[in-house]
Image (tube, rainbow, N blue to C red):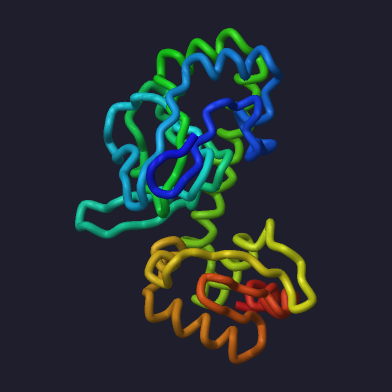
Length: 239
């Protein structure tokens, strides 16, 4: 089905060509059918807000297409990007499970297709289907590991080189291996990277330029190639 924002809308999870080994995507037929009955499929443009930090939980959002950034704001207006969500990930899970408020703000980085499930329906699904409960535990475990990663960026990394090198290495975990090195689409501005790793935009730009000068990485537009992975890892160890 055609949808706004130049996107082909996929509503049937069973025949979805984008199915991944992630959360609802890998469910067996009975659980997937139960999920399909309670989901609402919607498309959003870029820069759309799905939910806001401090808002009462309405439910969970399964990202099918596009990318979403998760941010946290301080009382003085500073913004920290705490995650970039890719297709297959569930947003708002912690708040839905606890019944509390959303801890973060979710904003689309590009046109997205999202499946929304109301909190009461989601809680019922976890009670009736053990594999959905298991998927919830896996996602919460992943969120915990990511929180530890953020602490490492902000509290344990001692230099800008270490922070940026670690960020690039972790972002390239699913990169394509080429003759030139590991190639991946970054799709973040230097300002957004600075909000993730906790340094200034100018420092990010200076560090990326230094990495390019040392032939550790190459960039073209939003594409990054890690040309010397061992050299980049050495930056995290020696910093």
